[in-house]
Length: 132
Image 1 (cartoon, rainbow, N blue to C red):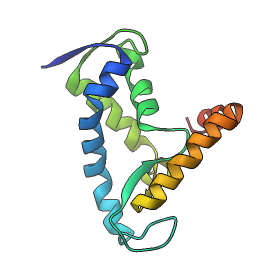
Image 2: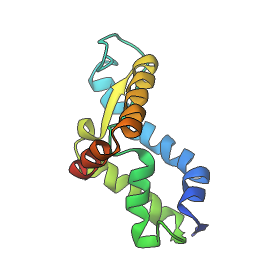
Image 3: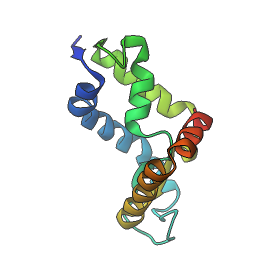
Image 4: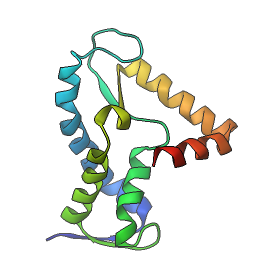
């Protein structure tokens, strides 16, 4: 099987987009289940799956890759790493892992989280620890 050797940054940069595609496929049935209604504004729209605050895709990837040497040098079978990442996504109920928003609401959600991390880093870290 194909292997990856590199840093967590390189993994997220080069392999991360394929993980995003898997997450889209995983979340698609739930979007249909909620009738494509944005969980923020209530409008019917094309929805995007937004990782909940404190459990971003890079954070989940990092957590999944610890057995493979993260955050330092990662050496992993790509399929095994992908399976570990998706397992972490599926361990919690989907509605606790993701919010489902239209693009404008997703952008706003991300902006608020970025502001919390910047302005209140201790609170952001507390939230991150509670969500693990």
